[in-house]
Length: 59
Image (tube, rainbow, N blue to C red; front, side, top):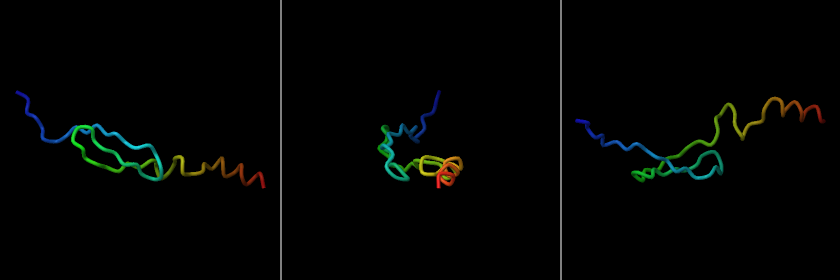
């Protein structure tokens, strides 16, 4: 016999990125959560070192 867990296996529906975090809602239980849109060390909100060098060389 398999025991059922009272914990939800979340199926998140996350809003489109618009800033550092997006809100998500679980389709199964309705729980709300916040999800980061980028990783601190890299991501769309950070310049790559290659892009920085290109800007410096253009001056």
